Length: 371
Ligand SMILES: NC(=O)c1ccc[n+]([C@@H]2O[C@H](COP(=O)([O-])OP(=O)(O)OC[C@H]3O[C@@H](n4cnc5c(N)ncnc54)[C@H](O)[C@@H]3O)[C@@H](O)[C@H]2O)c1
Image: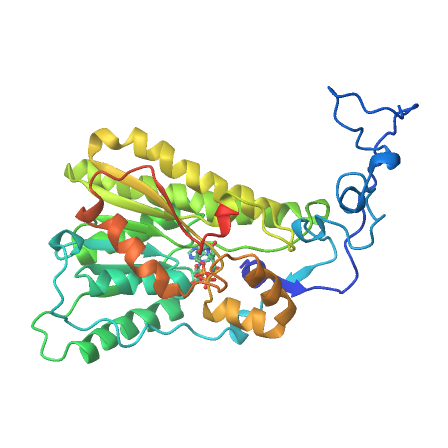
């Protein structure tokens, strides 16, 4: 079900330029030849326009050839196609970063004794964040709609841990659970299963989500509903289920919602209005629930990643080097993020290192949203 939605589209960018805006500024009927000291020159007065004006404020769209703003617009002619599920490269746990070390660090970052759920943890960013929590001491329940990959990834995390920590007296418990996070029944069933296996839950990371690219005019309504269903309802439903459990136990907890920089900016050139709105909703859901549950000791924060190079995005961009060039050119640090770049962020917000941080949005985007 909804495989096709999940296996969506990425870029087929045509080289034709964006359609010009139809807007035409009205010119004043008469233009004074005298420039009064107290008035700025009229922006449409050709007499006063110099080269700079011609290329900027005085020019009509299209007048100056390649026009300013053209790289700051979405383009309707871009179709982004995601690979079919079977063509997707599997995600692997990060190698070589998880062993015991002897560098001094704050004990508050430890997740020892905690049980964390990671939705969408079978692959991509969710898998790497699950690994960060395991490496930091937590037991983890991976929740995903892709049952097989979730099972493989849970095993992969344990195998990696064992390989990097030979002789460790305690191997973390990592389990895999099926769930469609957009379904309240499925959410409750999977949580019940997790509680049976782990006994309790202290932390939640909601990484289940997806994007797709249609211009708004053509967006099929059922797909839009599914997109919001997974990204927004799914985040909300799992957060509420875990918060209920924490309240019943009278225990503190931390919830980290994975939003996106798309919740604060509009990506270009690919059109994706519903995704952007969904991620804005996730960000504000985190703030709203942080306030609502502050009295119960439940912290809720959001991580907003920028463009991250997962196995999936790598495959898409390998097929579309022009898109990669465009994306990278907009990132001040000049490169896309690696999934590992979220390991510290998720551990910080999940652990006692951030006990007074709630309702925050932590942007991990190479300063994309600063420009
Ligand atoms: N990759 C990026 O560049 C990027 C940037 C910003 C935000 N994000 C967000 O990070 C999150 C993870 O993205 P990713 O790149 O790792 O994607 P991904 O497709 O690699 O992984 C998403 C996982 O969620 C699972 N999933 C999808 N729908 C589900 C459902 N209904 N119920 C349960 N599980 C479901 C998938 O099976 C998959 O394992 C998403 O919320 C995404 O919007 C990603």
